[in-house]
Amino acid sequence: MRRLLPFLGCLAAGGVLLAVFGPGDPPGPGTSPGASPGPAGAPTARARADLVAGARAYLREHPTDARAWTALGGAHLDEAGRTGDPAHYTMARSAFRHSLSLSPEADAMIGMGVVANVRHEHGAARVWGTRAFRAAPHRWPLYGVLAGAYTGLGRYGRADLALKRMLGGTPDVASLTRAADLLRVRGESGRARAVLRRAGLAASSASSADVARYACGLGELEWSLGRPRQAVRAYGRALAADPEHAPAYAGRARAEAALGLTGAAVRDYGAAAARDPGYTADLGELYEYLGQPERAARQYALFTSYGLARVDVLRAGRFEADHGDPASAVRRLRAEWNGHRVPEVADALAWALHRAGHNAEAATYAARAEPPGTRNASTAYHRGEIARALGDTVSARAHLARALRINPYFSLDGAPRARQALIELPKAPPPPPPPPPAPKPTASAPAKAAPSATPTPKPSPTATKAAKPQKSPK
Image 1 (cartoon, one colour):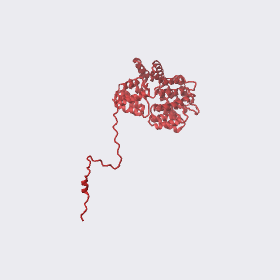
Image 2 (cartoon, rainbow, N blue to C red):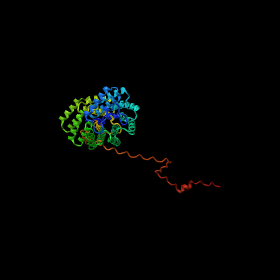
Image 3 (cartoon, one colour):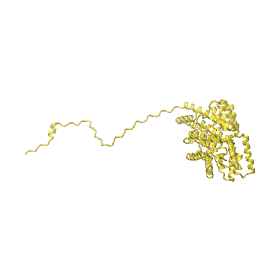
Image 4 (cartoon, rainbow, N blue to C red):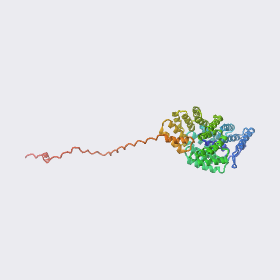
């Protein structure tokens, strides 16, 4: 399934504990429940569950410890990033709100902003990021919140200012990786790689969770550039640091499938689905691509039974558009668009409208899904298919070719369809020859009289003599 911004999972929703207890912050009584693991290795799922349980037990004894509530919210964000379970976002928001009811914790404000960005509530994320800036302008994760919010709102100048402010300081690995992802989505792959290089240097002396986050971000960049082999290596490094990282399993499976390593892809998608049932749809699409419709149907049924209401609304909408009821997808995504008018929602709604047969309306949303400078192969493919359905051959060829230039492996089913469509679409007629150049105007000098077509006869000598005056007689 085409997952929207899968890097959000790699990023663990903006970072383990959002750098709640970042460099230079003294640990308080609430630090230990949510502290990120050290370089010795990532904690197991049982260990992470024990951390959350320990935090809750501590808070039962110390319910007014605002910092501990913030740490608990960060722990839930960490779990949401690893498992993809949206229930952790809800619990994280609840913990952050409880913290803010006790004290104006800047890190709780940052946490609220991260949750808002994940849910495409970019206006609310901007408000929380601004509040965090006023409270603690040197908490670098807040600039990641602001950059993400302004990017989602289409205010790219503001997003750049936030990124520059963050990169000019001493941001943590999570903030650097988030900055790289925003640059990647906007098509600035060179800058994204430079920021990731900086994140890699910082991650080498940080926790294993930071290593996993950086490596997963690198995998997303390599994949977006159409480099599946390099992506496989990067995701492998993420899993070596954190063997429980579901998005890294799914990312590696996607790249392995593009390379024809379908057996490995099935295993990795299975590992991802075991940790996040939302990936059962991706596994089903792989089975469908492999010509195993019965297995695909089982995975789709698992995804549906898992509960469309529990997964991200865009994931649910895309699944319904491709494998369920497109009309239902349109209703779901139209409601999302009414609340969050951002490019990713526009793309999902455009595709659902196309699948439901409303191509003219789909084209209006598809145009809004690609702000200037963005590079997303799936979005370009959607625009191409919508244009093709409308009979716009020129636009269809342009968008489909662009999708394949961005990433020739962008989708198991979409990439082959784009290639086939380019073969079948008639080529655009050659442009008409340019008109002949207009004559240059002459200089404004006095015009000479044009010679007469009939030559003027010269007077005869007799006539000349007769014309002379005669002397008067004396």
